[in-house]
Picture 1: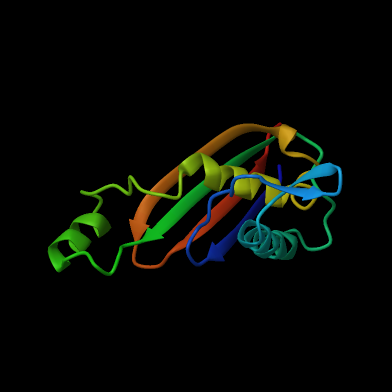
Picture 2: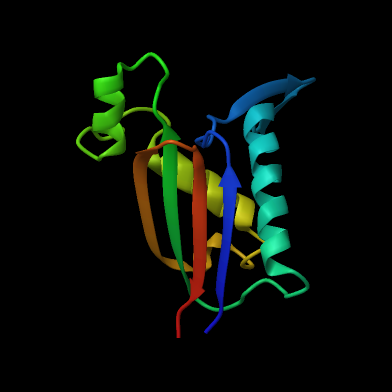
Length: 140
């Protein structure tokens, strides 16, 4: 049973809304530049974690531990409450949009397609250092 671990440092981003552009008589749907750049960053860390291994073709479980930085505008007392878990990060980015960004970015790198994901665990917490810890595990 294979396990892949990697970490993406920095503020997590959720999947941006699809954009529409007109090209002559046609309308094209595309992903915004910030989301594309973040997905490229995720792919680079995922590819490094995979090394020369081919993408998995089995069912997988995905675990995302999302660490959000405490806003600098918070008082010391509120910052301590956030870091101790008394205050939860009920703010953007949305947890489902973060998961969508990571699953899309890991397509064809960690696994062939995100349809292979049969189990998804995502947790969002406040932390002194922002980032996302990722673990992908083959299911037997």
